[in-house]
Amino acid sequence: MLALALLAPACTGGVEGKPGAPGVRDPYFPKLGNGGYDVTHYDLTLDVDPDEQTLRGTAEITARATQDLSSFNLDLDGLTVDSATVEGRPAAVNRAGSELTLRTDPKAEDRLREGETFHTVIRYSGSPKTITDPDKSEEGWLPTDDGSLALGEPTGSMAWFPGNNHPSDKATYDMRVTVPKGLTAVSNGVQAGPPTTQGGRTTYRWHTAEPMASYLAVLAVGRFETKTSTMAGGITVFTAVDPESAEASARTVARVPEVVTWEAEHFGPYPFSATGAIVERKGDAGYALETQNRPFFPGPPSVGLLVHEMSHQWFGDSVTPASWRDMWLNEGPATYAEWLWEEEKEDTPAQESFDEAYADDDNWAFPPADPPSAANISDPPVYGRGAMVIHKIREAVDDDKKFFALLAGWTKAHRHGNATTAEFTAYVEKATGRDLTELWKKWLYGRDRPAADG
Image (cartoon, helix red, strand yellow):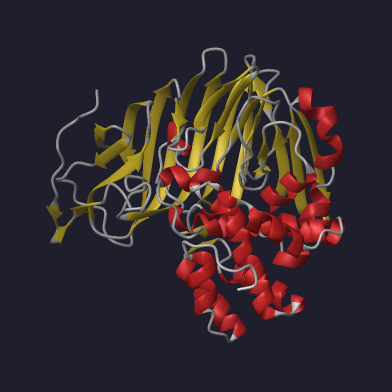
């Protein structure tokens, strides 16, 4: 049985540790994430029973202390912690809702010191929960007709593994997922060897070499038709499609390499070693999601939706928002990628897409860089008006070669990192050599609809 005592700072060897913060004070999800450490790697071993919708897991977490720590927190919602160790020593666990607080023996000689890399192992089990977001969408663990689906934006990853569940802490991942024979387990990255079957159960191994925010982690368990190939540059293309969606998806899914190549020409080199798609049957989820390396689609996607979600590999997955207030940095460029595709492939000028978005009253409910609440971070202004901001930057540059160089420069400057809206506006002004205060005031932060040519 785990200890549930209140925790106190410890002082050993002249070093007084302090508790890590139980949240990072995100403006919309203040309790998400944790302070005092930075995760560098997650090693997850998961055993899934789709019939019972249960999970047994072991999370081995490698992290670096950013302060002297007497205790630190992890986010885990709903599952039971069976045991925990830090640096091989049993850890006391205090639980309050989705917050786990861990500490080792306060008398131990080797406390967690600032700059030290340490290893935590959490063994847990139970029935993962479905999380309802403030906007009423569902994420976390979603049962499907033939298995289960785990999605994480913005909070759902803590439904199936413990971690530092905020976009500001990115890490590499290894996953070993065991499922009943005949089912497939699909996750991020590349397969680390062929699946192995023993005792009627099959284990799949996935490796994500580039840093990934926890909300971009995905796990799909079910019956899939899978294909693996290699595109130019040695990028692995892995697709997994539910048989019910296979025929209707085939032509669009086959265009993944084409879309990635086209976007690399506009946004800079593709930032990952793998790409692809996961296509479930209709009804298994209510939305598509830019899960890293292979976006998720709830049924056969259109080409425009593929363009949108794949562009997130640059805008959102590689360059990840520092907080959920910066969500428009994901959705504005991704929506504009759709406009660019329509301009170049379907002879619909981006200006026409701009005019249509401008006329849509829904895009003027609030400024894209300042949603009023957590329930609004995926509302139309973040997408449509966010794309209008990008178009206005293009107009200000007035040279498409320089405009696309600006976009590619942004994805290069923050590759595999995090960025804020303030960093973006400063970058654009430095790159263009122009004071764009009025543009930001009217289009990014303004609450009234400006003149279309303003």
